[in-house]
Structure formats: C-alpha cells, structure tokens
Image (cartoon, one colour):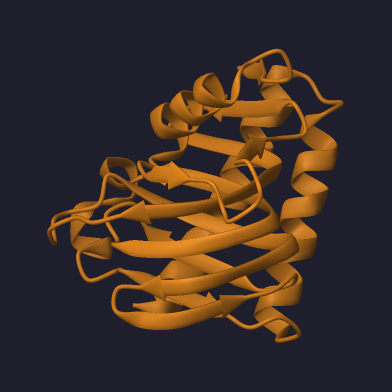
Length: 188
C-alpha cells in the first residue's frame, strides 16, 4: 500500500510515522526555526514492513522511555542535513551517508537541522523478540563498505517502489528486509 503524504499536515504526517514506522516522540521548534516535518510524499506499507523516502525534519525531538521490548526496528540512511544530540546517554552526531539501525524504544534528545533520511521499519514480532532484545542503536559510519551498500540498496529500493506493481514491491520488500536483518545479526 502506498500512502501519499503531500496533502497532510505535519501533525498527520507525524501520526502516520508513529503508526507505521514505530516512532513516538515529542517535538519542539529549534531556536528561530519552526518545526518542519514532511517527506517526499510517499510512505509504503508492505506487509510487516514500512518505508519512507526522503523524510525531512527540522525540529528538536525528545523521547524518554523505560527499557522495554521494542515494537519496531528501523534502518535509517541519512541523506541530508545533520543530527546532534544524546541517544541512550551517548553524544551522537550524524551526517549524510551514516546508517543507523535502532530500536523503537530508545530515549533521545536530538536537534535535527534540515535532516533527511530514507527509513525502513520492520515489526519486531516479525523478526523475533529474542533476536533484538538487546538492541538499542548502532551507527554504521558513512564510507564503510556496509554503509555504502545499505545506502545504495535502499535508494534503489525506493526508486523501484515508485514505478513497480504491488507484487514486485512485495518481492523487493523481502530483499531489503533480508539486508537489514543480516546487518542486524552482525550488530548483535
């Protein structure tokens, strides 16, 4: 299923991200800059996997949570802008080309400035709770062979999703999911 988010308000877009990408957060404007949360207009829901291309945010995002089992594992490829902040008590800086694999239950306080990413979310129930019980997040630095492969694969995945039929989209989802799960297994 393909959902066009271009006509949605930022609040509707956030609600859609929460529902399909397993993300919950409070947002507030960066100093002197109103929050901007949007996307290239497409969110895909492919079985137990969801995906969004060029998701664009300028905001301050915060989430505090108790350690619990994650509902979703997300793989993000940073495509633009910057992220500075604290995730699970550690200082992080993300730039284009970095890849982040994360659980949906992490605590963070982040400033996102013209931040863009491609993101795939996979239901933990589908992957198996035992496989991801220790996952918080992992950053794969830009320029490493793994980051380059994941970024190129996800960009190709989104390009093909824009033009293919539903059956082909489901097959592509299985392939990109296998890539994310393999990297997840390497991390854990």
